[in-house]
Amino acid sequence: MKALDELTFDNRFARLGDAFSTHVLPEPLDAPRLVVASTAAMALLDLDPAVAETPVFAELFGGHKLWAEAEPRAMVYSGHQFGGYTPQLGDGRGLLLGEVYNEAGEHWDLHLKGAGMTPYSRMGDGRAVLRSSIREFLASEALHALGIPSSRALCVIGSDTPVWREKQERGAMVLRMAHSHIRFGHFEYFYYTKKPEQQAELAEHVLNLHYPECREQPEPYLAMFREIVERNAELIAKWQAYGFCHGVMNTDNMSILGITFDFGPFAFLDDFDAHFICNHSDHEGRYSFSNQVPIGQWNLSALAQALTPFISVDALKEALGLYLPLYQANYLDLMRRRLGLTTAEDDDQKLVERLLKLMQNSGVDYTLFFRRLGDESAALAVTRLRDDFVDLAGFDAWAEQYKARVARDGDYSEEQRRARMHAVNPLYILRNYLAQNAIVAAESGDYSEVRRLHEVLSKPFEEQAGMEQYAQRPPDWGKHLEISCSS
Ligand code: AMP
Ligand code: MG
Image 1 (tube, rainbow, N blue to C red):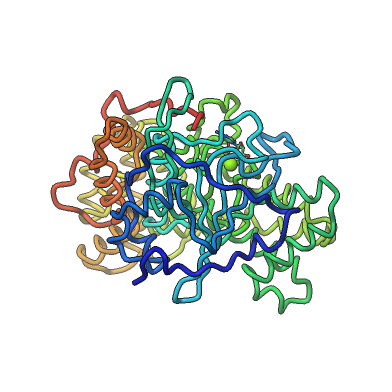
Image 2 (cartoon, rainbow, N blue to C red; image 1 turned 45 degrees about the vertical axis):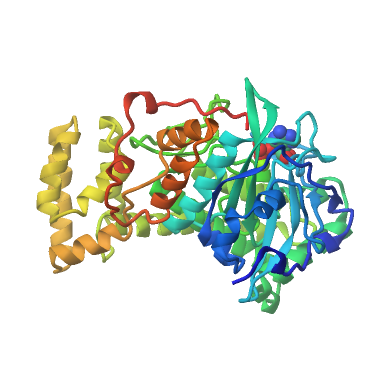
């Protein structure tokens, strides 16, 4: 276990130099204080959990203090936003404080979001509000607990610093961790500004640090791109299987590592709705729930375009062709598991599609349906779940097919079925209204709810005593919350 001053830095991205990032110091928050910390994320840095409660913790992650070995940098990138190219973006309010490596030799970027203005702030104030910082913290850690690759969050630091959005709010910082903060947009920036040498330097950096096994391949860059395609197909399959809607899949928000990244107006589905749009500025539904699948491919094509100086167009196209079949295979595999099936049959895709259509038409809670389906034998479970559906004849027909499918699947005890299904079907997800309750309390200075919610979501598959209220459908007020895009 380490104390805060024992972290070991190795700032590999900073060493790439000024073409890639700019040295900027964090702008301190007034009266910084700990809102919430993740002991699981602290463990990744070998940090003693007790240090979160010390004043120096809030000072370090509230922009007041810095390790001597930290080299805070604002990274430059660009990207396609809602389909149109924006030539210059960058860390407008976040800083890569440095890269730390733990005792296992893993490097973690420490990235402080809400750290003040940088050369890339454009019209922004460089700040993040408490509301959005809490949402990012909870979502990163909740996704990780669900087994969905994501950036991590170490802590949220609150403050008295006034920040203007639609109304006056308070500034906060979230300390984000990832093995890299390099986005698709980094490659696009050097491609569209016609800086091939720097682009090659960036590609070498990513290859050496994050895809070293691709070095062994005849065409290392192509192998790396293929790997990025595969990781994204797997990631988006998980989002779709668990009902996660990212909301702003611009290429500057896509990680080169294939992890969930840059949280804005995201949401987990309550009722199943394939057309759900969680971002209220997304009038055309470009980033609707079901569109995440083709958008994943669109974004990979944008990255492919940026890689044309290194890889032939034909090879890039072939690699892009891996995306959809791989997505489908991963998605179907997850959905089979969510249905408690251990074998594969040709008609399983149809079984899933029919169920989702029925859920869509009846507004059935996506998370609770699967959880309850595993509570008891298939026959008993479908009888109990029947009342949630409007189209009873349709559901009965599906239930018959499902029971027959389960009977063909194998001979297992009810206990085995329950254990297997509960291990993949969470009871607790980050519903918008739960986050909202925690935010309202935190805005009035009470951080107990955000801490409790974080705890509950860190074990999403385990039924926790006294936590029934976190496993409920939203109350009426919480069903269609408008999550502000300003953050
Ligand atoms: P986002 O929509 O959060 O992914 O951000 C898009 C771009 O706007 C990125 O370059 C951000 O760094 C920048 N940005 C967002 N909010 C702010 C802010 N409050 N101040 C400065 N830059 C910001
Ligand atoms: Mg972003």
